[in-house]
Image (cartoon, rainbow, N blue to C red; front, side):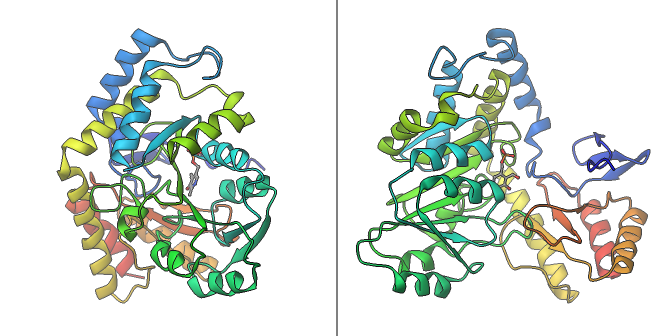
Length: 364
Ligand SMILES: Cc1ncc(COP(=O)(O)O)c(C=O)c1O
């Protein structure tokens, strides 16, 4: 059996063609629909004319590009980091950072529901990996109390969890970690979407850059393609010097880099994008709560519903389809084996699309 679901074709910015019908799309991670914004498209076309479709080499050989250098400067500025390096994807940002940290820590405290690419990445550190319970500072504290005072500790977690939008309690982790410990936050879903200026989970949680490493993707809020590592200049230099994956990979294509730059400019200059998203998140979450539908509390644009039975799944799917909504039922590593409905809100969903979603969910 082919494990791939049928291919989806976009039909406008908030719809897809599904089984021959134009359906509202509450899935994916293009939270501001910047992958289809006229400015990002224009930037990508212009860059492809000037720079071509690929740099055709590793950054460390002849594949460096002024677009990538500018993108790194703008990412660091937008995400409030001292420095940044762009990588081919968010997953490879994790791999590259992991390789560069080999031998630096004795123990990694790993959040049990971390993204698979973060889990894989910490296994390359050469440290003991100690899994802690989901969003549980006490579980972190229990591990910390067993460690020798000579331990060099790194805590690794997602900032916003991909399936239900839950937020990692970074401030509480800081409170129970040793002074010398570092935190590594995979903020693929938080970057651009949460925090007072969209700088992500660290901003929301009020943890500064001290002993903080972050990875993120350009393929979600920024509507493009690629990854990024954020940290001190020394840490970024060490990625360039020590990561074999970075050294041996081609960076994101120039059109993607230019589109990401345009996306950063849009997010930086048009605060209504973020307020539109925040308003929609608040509206849906308040309505779900009034209807007694339990979802994980979060300021992120993601929530999920896990059906208990196949009958429940079929019923919700029918109701969504009746409202003209593509049923976003997925199976994803780390989620329940039986699957879940993962809903992602966008700044571009209309009031009537949101009402349709609520009608389908409230009828449950
Ligand atoms: C938490 C998290 N980390 C990493 C990634 C990987 O990012 P990319 O798709 O850019 O490789 C994802 C993407 O789904 C993610 O949700």
